[in-house]
Image 1 (cartoon, helix red, strand yellow):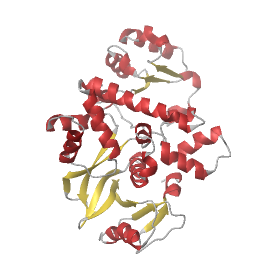
Image 2: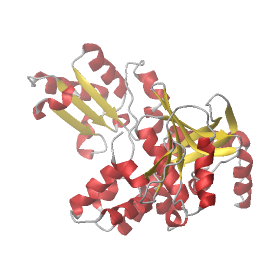
Image 3: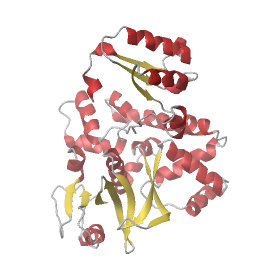
Image 4: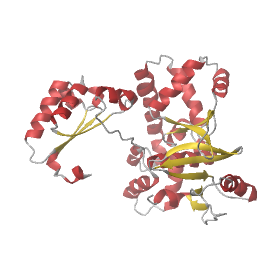
Length: 361
């Protein structure tokens, strides 16, 4: 974007979790500070405000700056309600929203090469499959030491951004529900199955509360809810959704060793988030009772994607390729796996998953 080429002295970045900025945590004080900054820049200023929800009446300040067209303003926050419906209400719809994702595999690799420039890609791949792409991991040369960071980050989201913000008093119930959803990432879920699990854990929750808690998790971007459609994308099966977690590293932080034991789920989760990162709108698919992992759409185009660990035998090969072969349209179809050698079939492309993640779309 053009603003990125402006002189450094035209930028100001304020993080309102910094105690040193406590004097700016009112709308008036912040407005006066930004006005003064803008008046001393010869170029158009860019103002970046992180955790802006910690400023009292912050929306009054932003709306005033916006109305006067004094500068370009970027605001971020970890508060889920701020980043979704409430943001549009506060700023009267005069905003563009960008969903920020954890590191992609390419970004994760760059961060690891800064620690060890000779690290082989095989190790980087295995580390990413295990630990995910939360940016804070770049501070840990030994990723095993980052397990506590992942767990703390996850619990902070659950207890602060979800439970506290949404006024959920039964935090233990919320934690139990989210733990189940973490374990089931990439699997079809139903309210009945969730209730059965909660009952086994001696947790009581009404159906309405259950759905509210799940919505709170998706509003906070902890989980991504994918509806199921037929292969043509015309009929929605609302009772057969899948749930994916924003970063599969949270599974490892909460359940040590789970990612290695459930590699198929992890790979599917990685592809789900990567497709969303590349701005595809995605659902899960069904072709005559055979599952298609992702039906992705963007700008009038469509892409069908299957994900698996390895094409180890004829049965696995048929399971992954046959549902795509049955789809009678000319949109591209793709199977992703960790196999080193591609094996395309009946016009269906087959790619190594790591190579897919590393190359730009």
